[in-house]
Image (cartoon, rainbow over all chains, first blue to last red; front, top):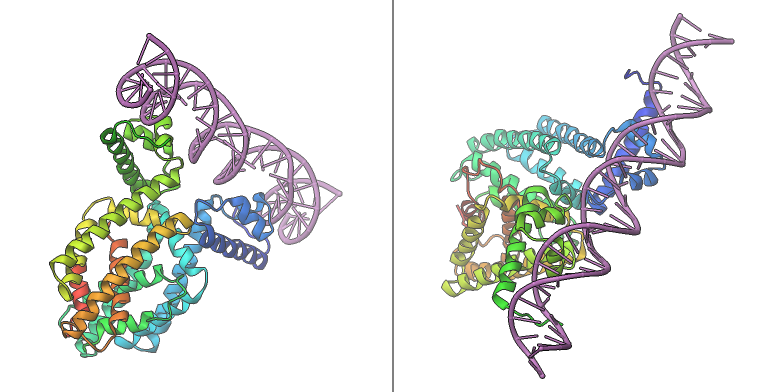
Length: 193
Length: 193
DNA sequence: ATTTTGCTAGAGTAGCCGCTCTAGAGCGAT
DNA sequence: ATCGCTCTAGAGCGGCTACTCTAGCAAAAT
């Protein structure tokens, strides 16, 4: 049990399914995407799909988990480059890059639609907690260094920043995103005028 | 066709269905809520349901449209009470009151999950446009009166405010909302420190 | 009184969807 | 050579769902 014959082929196939699932979830939403359609898009049979993911929900969780790991890496890379305000702005920037993906906005909406399923909520919670900790850490430092406003506590600023970025992510699909990007918004919130 | 026998009874029934639909969409999401379940909750038969709403989607649009009208009224009431920064903060306050509804957060997520359906997108677009116009109008005035920061244009501030409030609405379910409310967040964004 | 029309109930239906099952091919170990 | 395992295909199935249909009742119109 669990022994994998050809590791390379295995992860490639798995990733292909995951990426097709991501695209279709983004375009049609979770419930309105059928496993059959994912199979068609990925060029596999249902047997193969359910071999890799015992459940459709498991495929979604797979996508989310991959995203979480990506976030983890991005944060630690950013953190090794610098701390304080710079790190926070760098994070906003990396998020903004993600938002450029034409499927990003759709996927955010799709996930929101099934956020109440415990398996989904768990991963999302992990990611949210991770980011909050990152923000609190670096905003505290930035506050101590007087890089940012000090009339609002770092904890509150962290929360507001998260709201701001979540809101921006939700509108990621809008083509009129030219007016004002996420980094500028965060800068406006954090830096005293 | 279209003649209504007892106006009172008609709208009461309709509203009852709408409010039950709202609750169930909030709790289970749109796709995972069955019309049968709404009927059970509202104490009616499927025949009645489909007499009032030819489609499940029509029921959702009905809920959204009711919300839009509510927003319209709230905005004009606020606007008649005052303008500029005060009006913007009053709007944030009224939104915050809405968020206190235990079903609000769930409903926001449910709607997000089907935002790609054109009928839903249309209503949401109307509401978004309405709010943006309100914000731009009053933030411009506030800016001219120097009630708020002037280093960022009112248009940008309007957008950031909308992001902030949308993000807050998304987290409305969280019980730890004690830490920092929406009004304070908007104030922090708008008022120079 | 009779007709018309809104309204309601509830059984019924067609279709879709997530998932299972079986059969077999490829490959590694013994 | 043989066994055991992963992997793949694809037909099939049980269950659920949005919606339809028919029939009857109440009340307004004539």
